[in-house]
Length: 342
Image 1 (spheres, rainbow, N blue to C red):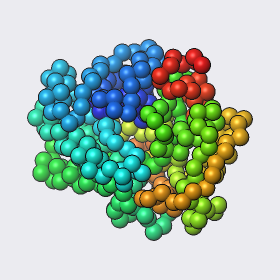
Image 2 (image 1 turned 180 degrees about the vertical axis):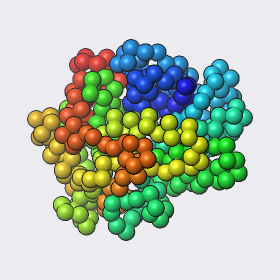
Image 3 (image 1 turned 135 degrees about the vertical axis):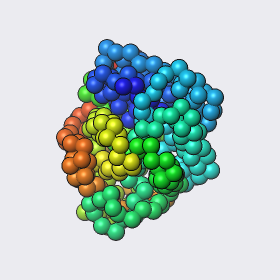
Image 4 (image 1 turned 45 degrees about the vertical axis):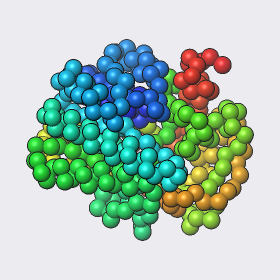
């Protein structure tokens, strides 16, 4: 079975490529390197001792998408490609809407043209907006508090409409909570370009000495310690969720929706303490104002994925912090230098 992975050189994409190759899928990656680099794919092949096909291409360029489908008989697509920073999306909403929506429309048009109608879409827990209670089930009302989340929500609605118009489509909407960690080898991990937008790479860059201190956005939320609470899930657990979703598509389910999370919430301060324990480093931080678009808490009810896919997260907070630190320590400059080189 041949799988096209858009954004496959990125953080979640590269870890999913590892698990796909381990399960003997043929993997084709399309990525424009806007927030990733080819070295991650070299390391995916090193970890697995298997080859994948790669195209440097942009979903905003339809002919480059056609080229991939003309070269390969694709059976299913896992669609990760997109801009993904909540705070940045508030600052530059038009860029987010143009990139995430138009890129997806172009991809879907190509899939339709080449009769490839199996899709796993990388959605987000941000489609639940600011939920009234926890844990969050797939039946909760949908809304968005920022342009990033709204772009995911619009794409979900487009995909629902697509299925209504053509019942040959099989679509899985995977609503992720907060991916953290890295492959246990330390070969691949989260490598933000510029200042990190996500919590764990920021903490780990403070721990390794690249950044002076962490900014904690708000300490007056209605949470146990006043800082934001999120459902952090190990990226390898998340990648395995995609692998276990693919057979579901082959059963012609139409549109299916799953939360991928642990069902537990950890605060920002708990994550800092976890990384301090893993690294043996004291992590300096300062409390600042809340960030626009953020909510107090967000964690999943992932029982539906366990029941229907046989999937559940197995890695602990200690695993997440240990693997994050292993990646950061081996790769203080990310992919810009070979693993282990200081």
